[in-house]
Length: 329
Image 1 (cartoon, rainbow, N blue to C red):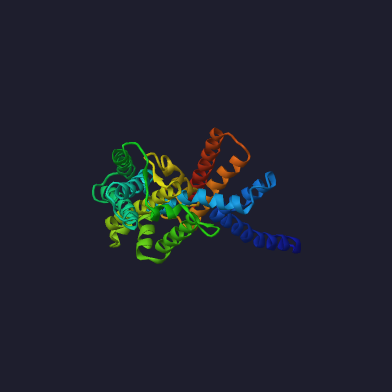
Image 2 (image 1 turned 135 degrees about the vertical axis):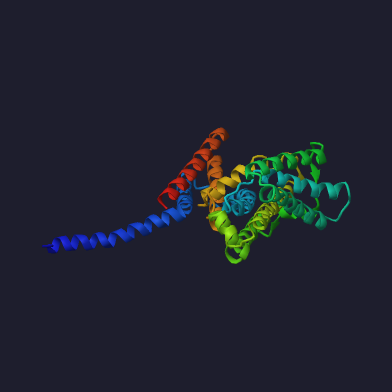
């Protein structure tokens, strides 16, 4: 027979199990956000200078470029792809914009639009290679990375070129608010809307979850893939203009290595490299986490070489968590 004590114990276990599973689910879904909160608390304890308005705005400015690149990268990773060209496309978009303003005398607003279109075109070409050329995403975007960086150097002859006032506005302030932070918010909302409120967004998740099943169900898989890489290029072009606006010039070496930060932000934010998952809010948290780590280490006067080691460890942990999450699922 079951005693009253055994019944009580069993009841307690049945109550605690769902609670533990809910906590575990919350941590699995929002681990980066929890980590960001604890990191901010730790840095505030270590140095009161961290949680000042000036420093937090600085973190926002530092994270803006990475976050915008990462929003575009989110589309690609949701479809189980990768885009190694975003840093080079960012540099090319800004350089073409600056070249057309300085050397061809086109109006500033036109050159800004041209910079965005260059990003869209370059990303679309990568997407065509992946979707119709059957190239692995790694190879197609690696080739575009080299092409875009080479064209940037050809146009600039290795020297900076001045940008239009309309582009420089992207690096300025509206009152006390930095324009890069406002652009970050706008880009994040656009990414969220596309992923969660459009047919294209639902198609991305379907393609990333099971490409063959998506094809058999009648989804336009090839058009979806081209659109994904074109969007990634568009966001990259926007990020490149943001960098140029802050510097008032297009730099031939701009955004070098930024593709790694973009990929890291997406993965840290909870997206799976196997595809089928990822969201704009997670990517934003991932980008902010990277920016806070760098900012905090700078305030604490940690050597920049060690900062790279720390960032590498964070990326490795995030990928490890992704692997464990997929195994448990």
